[in-house]
Image 1 (cartoon, rainbow, N blue to C red):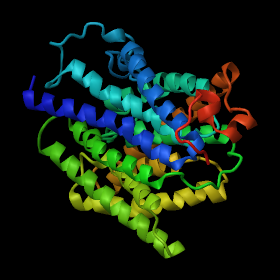
Image 2: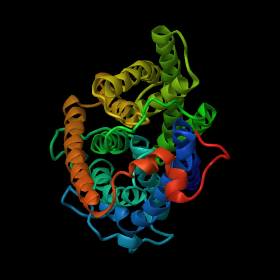
Image 3: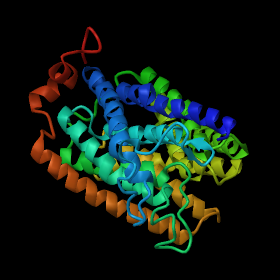
Length: 392
């Protein structure tokens, strides 16, 4: 065990949890109408609790167990069987590696929340998120980070390069979000603006800070590689924020706060897969392009395809993660075949599993709330609470 590495990953674990609670909850909560803000908080918080238990029970074993099939890790580490405080994973206590990876298993299904807010059944959220994390997310983790089929040369001469989750986190969550939005259909009145842009900014700032643990912690060491990952993460976020705002100003004559901070998230998502492999100038290029690319993806999904991916999960996270994964090859760092081929394999797998789970969960519990509940807001109708004395 290395004491410095252990101390840093303890901090990084807290930072990644901080991304979901309260960062993502505030970011998403500010973007919805006032009568639905508590439902967003409820989704994020409940997912964090439920995924933690399921990761302990089955998820960690599926992702990082000793299975040799290349498809999944098996069940030999269910309930952390055989893992003690003395067990090691590299230079870290394995129990710490488990905890660090648990925070990724929390935020990935939580990202999907942005696609279905203001109209989804709470029971469906819990059931779908549970099955999706175990049957979609955890196997993909094994393929890429657990020594599975995309990391061991089963399909391509080179291993896929995904440092912190462009494929594992952002592509999977983005595709699942898009599919859920299609199955749900649009909200009754999708044109309403965010109820609290200030809350959105605070949440985005927390995500930005937490992302240092997300990317820097993925080095799994306290060394120069972690420092470089943090630096390029910051530069990409800054560049994307500026280009998103500039592109808004060019198109609409005004640059908005919500647009500026959405650009931040686009830059963070886009640099995530590359953050352990690139130099600072690479990060600025990635961020600068992402600020425009993801903004145009929002327009395409909303206005051309008419899909109510409410908080633009696919356009920002999905497109950003896919773009960053491709840029690893574009910069000559990774293999084109491995990067593109892995995106296709994971994309197809995620699509099939997500559709099957949506149909299954829909048969068991309510997918979409009734029109009256949607009109009155999920906060009071579903949870018996409201965020403010007045509703809008």
